[in-house]
Length: 124
Image (cartoon, rainbow, N blue to C red; front, side):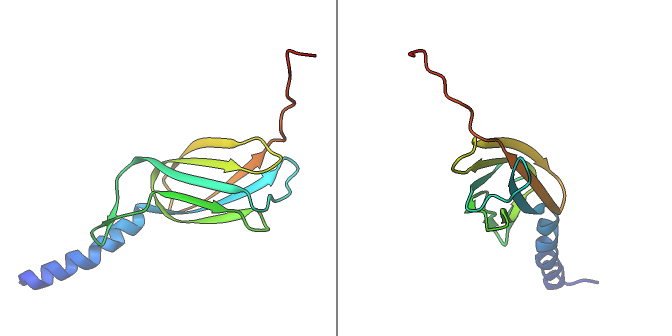
């Protein structure tokens, strides 16, 4: 028969394992249309909707603002699974924004940035 202390110990050790399965290790690759990596692009990732996660009694962080490395990649700390908004801002490119559904433990998202669109003026 399990004692109260043993049951509590099992619950404390099982909780982090449960929380880990509800998180995704997200990698974002930012490239040009011809496949070249975009260095120093600003990447904003925000958890939008899904199960709220608590780990060790604290809420898991749900917003990140990072920059891509020379290979155009950025690794996001574990994010709760559900709907995730990704925004990318890079000089010389159109701003990218999209909401994706994340349900895997590991996910890589490849983003191809478009060049800026020409500006039109009514005054010529």
